[in-house]
Image (cartoon, rainbow, N blue to C red; front, side, top):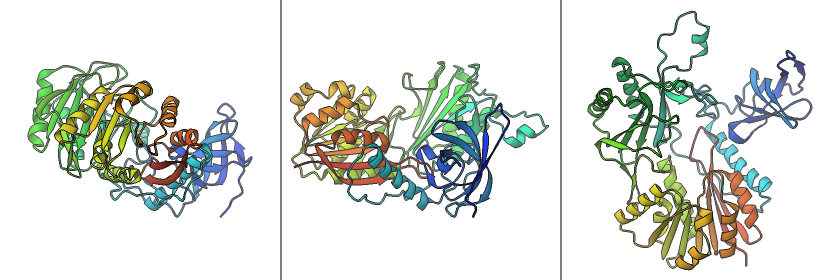
Length: 479
């Protein structure tokens, strides 16, 4: 297999080059892969698998690296598999579908270990092998699709002389293009009846003259479709309308209600704003309940249209079990659950704790957390709302007690440095850090390494066919 590479200059105005016979050697962050240019600089690639040998056309040139796309494949990696989805490489949602699952797990674990060592400069115990997902497809419980009257055209359609009459789409944004939607025929991320509901919604809308949204010019009736499911078979549908046409709105919603009687919660929003976010909008219940339920170890969790809940229900259960095991509660501990969301982890560990205190910045999430705790008849949890760096202070700790264990599950940006410092000020015996971004987790852990030893590390794959990976770390106070 050839390993020597050379390059030839393209047209000067593009300043792009082609590198030939590049060996793809590794996976990088954000689903990209890595090769090397003749001068030793790294090339980040967006359409290859480690082990491929390719010709690369560069798309960006930086001082320390290139970005590029493979334009010719000399040999294919033995890590490759055939993607199952017809939309692969266009949709952009499942970038690793062409890599065998065992190799996906290998590179996810490697990323976690590299981030902790290189970014955090941390001393690590032997990492527990990454926990793979039993379901590698159809694992998501929430999907959001967008309507468009100017869908993304395939390369064949663009090259064709035929006039394209049907430009309506219901699907996903093309990566990097806010106003272009790929029409999805079948998505492999959410189990049935998700595909059937989406396809029927589009079909009925077209047949009955309901207009699709044009984001550039801000017109059209149908804006987005959200489908949520739960592991106990409940289904929530939320249709977001841009224009307020009562007759056509009810025509569609009645049709969905009759066609899919299994729908538990049928909701809609009238949103004339320039953006799609529903968090500042009134959610209206058309039929059924305004929520669905999820269950876990006998606990019931109410989920409304604005609720955050882990999007892989089955793997979330495994993640929470690992978190609880790491905490290793004996029954007499006060536990703080930072970034508690709807209080799922807090309630999940509560039966093994003396008391759990949850803090979260989203008021609606805390309302859900309190309602869920009452429903589950859990009396040893308290929930508080506010910005973490402001609420989690000396006064709060004086009022609620000094925790023996802290569980923290922050967003992708990690913890604010003031929150990290407050943990160090409290100095609990254990900290269990759950993260969806091991890079920011490593940054935070570096600030804590003088006081804490890392005794356990457990990566968890929540999102097969993507580069995303969760990680759980147990910190124990140095003696």
